[in-house]
Structure formats: structure tokens, C-alpha cells
Image (cartoon, rainbow, N blue to C red; front, side, top):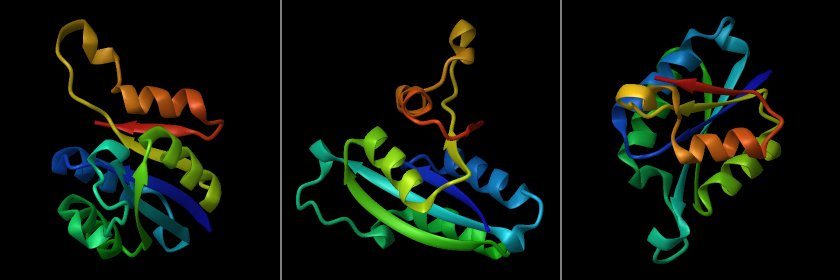
Length: 130
């Protein structure tokens, strides 16, 4: 089984690009995706997170499942980068699929701060979709 971690935020377009990437992987019947939404600790009032409360995450999971990929759905709270790296380790992800942020001018070559932090915090391959 080829395990991918797909951390999503509230941006539907970015998340859709992530789902497109996952569903384009060869042998989707051998791919398993964990769709993860992490609520930053400062935005989490109760600490208990429900995946079904995050519309973007639900839509991405459904999009990936519709292509025949098995999906696990996970919601968490905490420091976003730390939780992404920890979940990647927990599921032994072959790669982490992050959504890139659109930038203008010279900044187009840069990725968002979370993506950059994840890249520097893991030895796992990181794919940035856009």
C-alpha cells in the first residue's frame, strides 16, 4: 500500500489541487490517503475537532474516494507543522501532499510558511500542488 498524507486547510481550490494529484497517482487501488485537517491551537476552543465540520476536508475526501482511493479522515488541533509531521510518521506516509499558495511576482517561487516548515521538519518527500 502506498500511503499519502493530504493535510488540507479551508482553501477549497488548493485542496482540490491536492486531491487531483492524489487521484492521478498510478494504481489508485494500491493508494491509501489520509486527509488531515489541523486546527491551530489558538483557534481551537474545545480541543475536540470533528472532521465532518470542515467542509473542505470532507469534499477532498469524497473527491479522492470517488477515484477509487481508500481514505482515512483525521481532524486534529495543535501546532500545524508538528501535527502534520507527526501524522506522516504515524501512517508511515510515502509522501506528504501540500497545497501551494499563489504568490505574485518574485514571490511565486516561494511556498507558504507551513509548507516550508514541513519541508524542513521531515525526511519524507513533500509534494507542493498548485
